[in-house]
Amino acid sequence: MDTPERSSLSAPPRAPIPVKAAVVLLWAMVAAMAWLVAVSAVMTSFRVSTRFSGSASALAFVEPLLFLAVAAATGLAAVKVWTGRDWARRSVVIVCATVLVTALATRAGLTFGTGLAGTLVILALLVLLALPVSQRWCDKGSDCHSPRIGEREEPPFLVVALLVLVWAGVVFALQTGTRAVLADDGSDWLGLVLVAAAVVHAALNIGMTGRRKWGWLGTVGLSAVYTLWLVAAAVAFGAGGGPWMVPAALALVPVAFLWALLKPETKSWCRPASRARRRG
Image 1 (cartoon, rainbow, N blue to C red):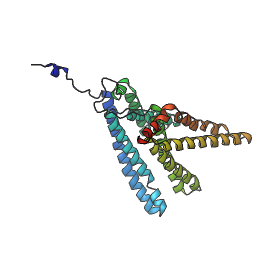
Image 2 (image 1 turned 135 degrees about the horizontal axis):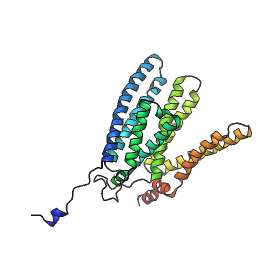
Image 3 (image 1 turned 180 degrees about the vertical axis):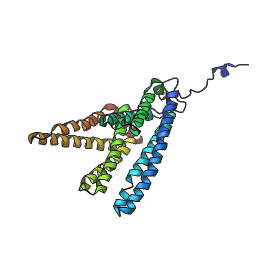
């Protein structure tokens, strides 16, 4: 005999098909990157045994380690999207949009074969996780959100975008910097500068991820330094009749970061009530 208690019970919401498809694609990407890590490690070991020695041999393994870190981050995103964390869904959407624009702008994503296949996978992920049904799965206020969504506070969109883009820049700077150092073509100093900047920004990004004020302050300070340096370079090039528009356009990037960092929601996230008034 049915009771009011039994009739009031309802099955927990199931993940919608777009979310399931996106998670499958993410795990497929993890598998592909795991294979890439293995290939890169073998090739790096061969290069080290024939070309490098000393500190250069350790630096050569940065690239496979970066592939491993990206694979781990992708796997984490797949797990968190499945459990309904909106920051993970937003992170994947931001990364997919950035990669897609870059691939199309450089035409690397239009080459027949792996380039076009990768573009289609990235586009599919972007569309699947941008759909309203996927947004509702990661929305605590929705009636059909994930039953495993948890109660932790979600970071604002600007914070998610900042963290994701800075991490992408760290990966790019580490890979480019180590290649420049190992190339032995006179660009060692530039490679070392890129590696040092990547390490500093990685430390600051870890601080911002942990909602530390020093991480926010350091990122604000470096963004201001980059802006002033690029503006000064544009003025110097303009006075000398050089290509001043390039540094002027590049200066818009740290300016955009400054704008996002100084928004009230970003400041409050990185300074949560002055660490709860120093724990009372």
